[in-house]
Structure formats: structure tokens, C-alpha cells
Length: 210
Picture 1 (tube, helix red, strand yellow):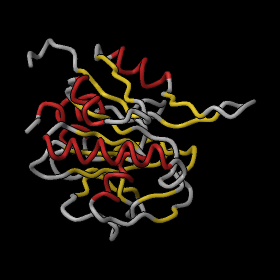
Picture 2: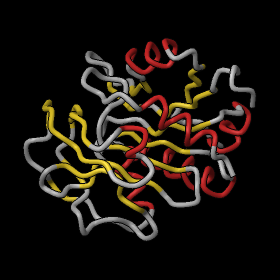
Picture 3: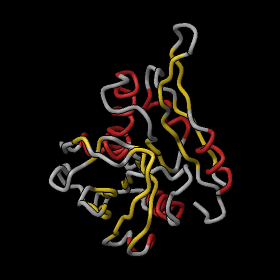
Picture 4: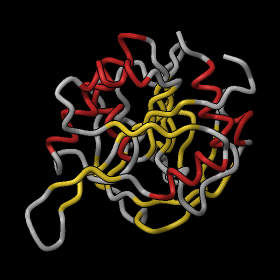
């Protein structure tokens, strides 16, 4: 892929309910669309109810799959099933994956990790310290936004995953899979308060396709 070619970004979607009648809907925040558009990248939406999600993903031919935030694991079985299939397919085929908030939780769960309730992380900002190669992208310390009530404790990482960011209490805020094109963060790159460096991080994951 040429450096000037816009990244094609597949986005998973949350499930919402129509307010006045029963009609489940897939949705994506305008924030994601405007963010990717401002970066010159092309958003590609992946519905939750496509019968063969992996084949649909292949047809989109994305450069990276972003597992977006919203909905705790277990709240929306349709979304859980769809995203688990997409993640497994991406890992089989070498498609780069980047997770945001719920996306990190899903990835950690896929690799047998543990989630736990965390306080003080909903609609808040806090400091994060970086380590390893991602520290070259984010620098050593940043303030990030936070919108989650469930997180990954320091002893809850899934098999093979490596942390690259922690909050001041040791909760995992960033993970990667060494030698594979996969990384995730607990903050929301599309929302106000995201740290400088997210664009470079996602681009680096996409460029490392196996």
C-alpha cells in the first residue's frame, strides 16, 4: 500500500434500541466518522446481523479492523457473537486489529484474560504511563479520556498479550500481541481527550499486516 493511499478502516458497531418501539439498530458514533475523515481515511461499517460476517469483512477489503466501544460484554449477545467471529477471522487471516475500550475487553477475553469492575473511570480523565515500542508513539506519559466501568487488572491479561500502558493504580490501559498486527487501548480515540499518537498507532498496526 502506498503511503499516500487512504487507509480503509472497518468499524464494528454498537446495538441500540429505537426509543418508541421495538426495533434494534446498529449504530456508529459520528465521532468515529469525522475522526477518520479528518485523517483522510475511509470508514467501512460492519453490521452485526450479517449472516457471514467474516466473508462480508473480506469483501470490504479493509486495511485494519477497529473494534469500537460501547456496550459491556454480555449486554448485547448479537454484537458479542458478531465481533468474536470478526476477531477470530482477523487473527486467522492476519488482518490488523485495533480495539478501543470494549474492543480491548473483547480481545483480552478472547485470549482468556479477566475483567473486573473499576471505579473512577466513567466520564473522567486520568494519567497513563507507556512502555515498550508504543512509548515512542505516545511518549512516556499522557492524559486520556475514560468511559468504562469494567477494566483489566494488572494480573488479568490474556495469554500472550503484552501491556504497554497502565494507569496510576496499575490497571491495564493498552495491550498488544507481540509479532502480530494487534493492539488495543482503553480510551476512546474518537472522543475529546484522546492522546496525541492514536493515528500513528493505528497506522502502525495496519502497516504490520502479516
